Image 1 (cartoon, one colour):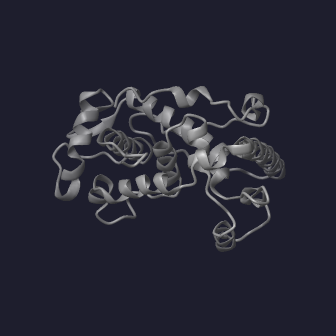
Image 2 (cartoon, one colour):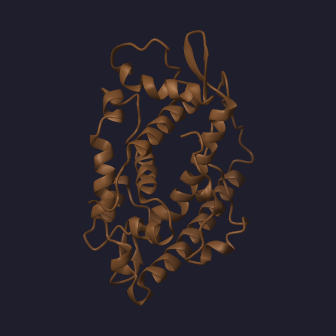
Image 3 (cartoon, helix red, strand yellow):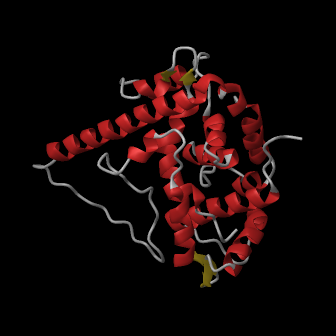
Length: 268
């Protein structure tokens, strides 16, 4: 039996969250009378309606504040994944080098992708998640979300692909083929990797804050045009922002797990 499995309950939860994100952040309101391949997502929409995550207006499913709260919880995890866990996707275990330590080296997009693909780098995100008691399936789901694997408008037959087995089997296979915690746990290798990676991640947060501050200073004398997005029902949800002055001290402990990962998705 596989160690990690995408259960039907997991699949249902994540598909619902993808749809909820599309409804709230992209204001894509699905009809209560599905046509074509929308039939594949009908039961997820009905379920969210029954749970009060969605309501119905003018023959369409629309978001509620309760639904927005669910998406806020997802984006809190998404932010922390991007800032503190994605760094473990490319680690040279022999040299103790992290590819992300060179994130600000002015790579082009193609050069950066090629650099990340170097065979000397190992993806240890699953081992880190396992060590911290997080759900590896959720970690890979967040990485797919970050990579645009669940984008709707740009994908033909997206309803079928989202609700079918292929992408979820891929997530399961990634979890089961990754370097394991047991392989790295000896001699505190994994503990040291987590400690070193976290230090680099926090330094990158600091560098980004300094760069953003400089950009604001450079634009002080310029007219800044702000385009507001008209929101029809509930406000969109963006990843939260915590600057370097946030209390990051607990994160230096390799055993520390932020409380946000303990918040259950209670509606699913």
